[in-house]
Image (cartoon, rainbow, N blue to C red; front, side, top):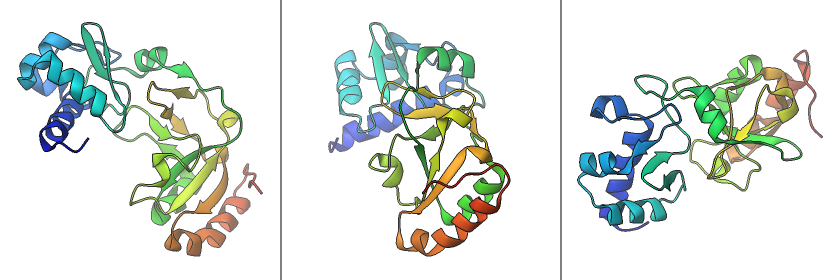
Length: 204
């Protein structure tokens, strides 16, 4: 997606469907679906352009189903009509084997090892199946946390492959790996902290 116009439209569409529906006066159901006609009217774009924006979105999070469209994950909880229950009902349960991954900063990793991962202003925590996904390629990701999905109460996967949970308890974190020079420098300290915490098991 290199066309500046498409990039601009994609960002506006993602904002509208993830964060701005109420502010824009856009009708949306609890799973994040809005009418294509309403979205096109608000953004002043044709259906053909909407389809192009969806097709070229590099994160694959925009989905059209007939006369409705949505972002499949990443919604804000404030001032949005979406609910956790409706979103989860629209996703598939995660059935993969082995640990899943969360990428974070060194500073955040210290807090996460003690408190777990909370979704904060979003409906769900975003996870990935392995470090080869985009979770390990963001600039802020210095540390990869391996997570045992069997220790989480509910794990789902959205249409674009993002793994989601309402929260990740600290005892579900089973491994720590540095993803950058800074992350690798902090790895021994973080692994020691993980191994000393009650209820933890560090992956080899």
